[in-house]
Image 1 (cartoon, rainbow, N blue to C red):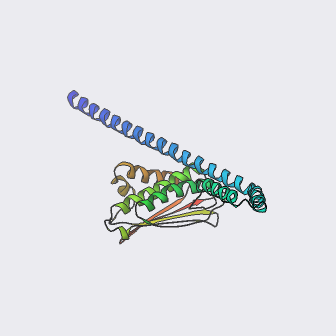
Image 2: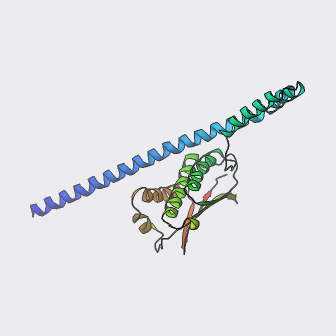
Image 3: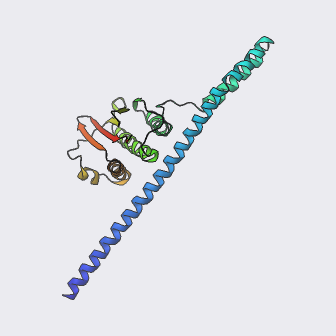
Length: 238
């Protein structure tokens, strides 16, 4: 009997250690993801501040150009405009929703998707301030898009790869829709589906669910032939 008890004790101990190590790795992954997201948000906030500075200095730039024109210094005008264009090129945002945090994630992820050959369509208009934790929102959006890109990369036909993002505020709810091409046929869209996803994809799906649950939101995943879509509603809490 004591041998059986000893064996059971060893088994329980091993399972406990495995669970602890898994949770630790998952926690480290989440912390790393949060850090990268925070850096991206800070970069776009810097771009926003620079753009506001340019709007503030607009009249000064025009006065300088007019002064050169009045003196017939056309070469100076060309050089000054070239300088302005060089500086502006570094602060251009392709995707501009009105919310700095969301812009950080969309410009980072969707630019990558386009470089990987995906046909990207994004329709998003948001208020500058959202009563939702910015880090949670950006991590949520980042995981959704990462999963979509990963699914598209498994499709051999480059013309068939697409990614669509739609975001808006509806009746005090933040609505997020991400759909993408896929060659997977998924029968289970619940925890069993998430469990079957290995590596970072599985971690990302769990993170999405945790954030939605944290904000008492709603998530709906749909899989139709060639298309996988995720819809999320988060209460605004005004």
